Every structure is written in structure tokens, then in C-alpha cells.
Image (cartoon, rainbow, N blue to C red):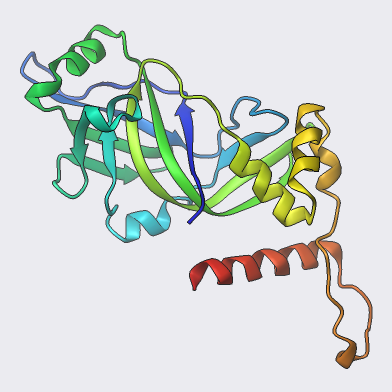
Length: 226
């Protein structure tokens, strides 16, 4: 599995049931097909199938943690105190806040804590361009680590995304990072992945760059599986 990443969602976390006694909070931890903010030279979108494997496996070992803090655990999928589901909008969560986290419940009820975030690991992604010609990373498949109501949006660490682009483009990571800082990532999206020609087949020439990129990505996926 790859390194853990975090993203903040443009949506509200709220008390889910009506009444003063309700201790259930939730919201959308992730929304599909929405372009993110500029993450440092590229934007991102989440494919509706991104959580399909995790959902199919029953959301194993997923936690709800306030501000992603291990010391502020709110619930877990294993215990049934955290419930997760996907729909046409995105990944929805509801968690039963324990008595020991009364402060979190009060902050959400008052509206002081309004955003949600999720931590994940990417299994497969793809790179392209937006209609405006800006580099776009699409998250295709991944594992869910946690969902979190947050009062301070997490730092957008994009090192894993840039490493993915460098790998797919056959480029040096240092070069890709420098291009991101200069706003020049688009030049890597037209570069074909390195191709090894099978001389035994007669060396009929390089395949189409897009085909080569897909073949390289498929090979990387097979390596991750084993």
C-alpha cells in the first residue's frame, strides 16, 4: 500500500438526528467528481469507484477520529459505532460520539467544527488535463483509513501524488517536484513511459504512448497485488 494522504471535504459535519439527546454526527467525508483546490500545481477528483474495494470488503479497520488524532477516537467500523456508505454524491459517514467526547459533540452542535476530512491510501490513479488545460489527478481506487470532523483543515501533503506522476511519466521525482513549484507539471502529461522493445519479436517499434502508459500502469497494479 502507498503512503497515507489526507483531504478536506467541502461539506458540513452536523448532528444527524433531531433532539438534545442525539449523539450522532456525520456528513460527507468525500465527494465524487468535484475538482479540488489547487494542490500545488495540479487539481484532483475522486472517481465514484474509488472506495469500491473498501466498501466491498465491509470497510475494514476504518476509524472516526477528531482531527485525525489517535487520542480522540470517536468510533470504528469494526464496533459498528461508525457507519459508512457511498451514494451518488460521495462517501457519507455517521458516528456515535462517546460520552468521553462531549466537547466534540458540543463543537459540532454549535457550528464551531464544520468540516470533514478523510485519510486514505491510493491503489490506482490516473493523470490528465482539465478542460482549462490544468493538470488533473483522478483517484481511481484506494483504501480508507479514517474519517474525521476537523476544525483546522489538514495540510495538503501532495508528495504521494507527485511521486505517482513521476512514476507514470518515467521521470525523476526531483524534476517533477521542481516543475510543480514552477507550475509546469503539464509537460509531463505528454511524455510516454519508458518502453523496453522485445528484440525477439522483431522490434516492430514503440507502441502508441497512451497504450504504453496504460500498460505500465497495469504492470504496476499487478506488482501491488502480489
